[in-house]
Amino acid sequence: MFNKNKKFTSSSIDYIIVGLGNPGREYENTRHNCGFDALDKLADKYSCDMRKLRFKSLTGECRIGSSKCLLMKPSTFMNLSGQAVVEAMNFYKVEPERVIVIFDDISLDVGKMRIRQKGSDGCHNGMKNIIYLAGSDMFPRVKVGVGKKPHPDYDLKDWVLGKFSASDRKIIEDVLDNTVEALELMVSDKTSEAMQKFN
Image 1 (cartoon, rainbow, N blue to C red):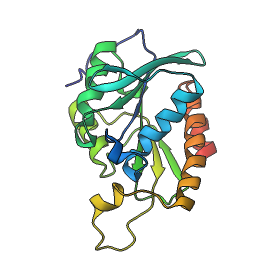
Image 2 (spheres, one colour):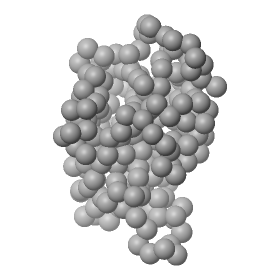
Image 3 (cartoon, rainbow, N blue to C red):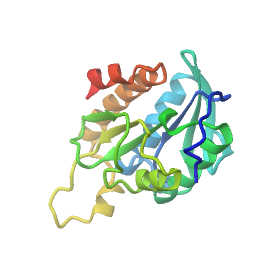
């Protein structure tokens, strides 16, 4: 568990940015992998090589503005994401307030995103595991809307592991561009500005 009582004042990494998803080709472009997709866009923009396997994740380091950032795509599968995140937090001594998590949200329509500075897991299993293992809910997060199930009897697992329609995928690509811009603001200590612009 992350030591939340110890106050850290310095680190070789200023921010950890985590995109949530499931590893493997069969999960690519699914609703549940929006966090991975957003991180890929961020990594592409900053020419960040994401092939290094550390902290049970594919990782890369880059400088965004004046902040040195560790980018992470956990390979633990969604429900155990906290294992990867807490391992990196402990290694770099980064507090939850400087760990930004990106994940899908079925309560938001496709095309919507929400930025929060802290809060509950919102019934998202990846976020739930991170909060549980870290012992804190003080993680800033970017939630990408993937839309609700088409009807109440539709299996939730099938929905989140399903792929977007062609029209929804185009909308998601635009949202992911906005996510990158929001992350740039957030690692510049401008989370409130990001919330005003994109929420």
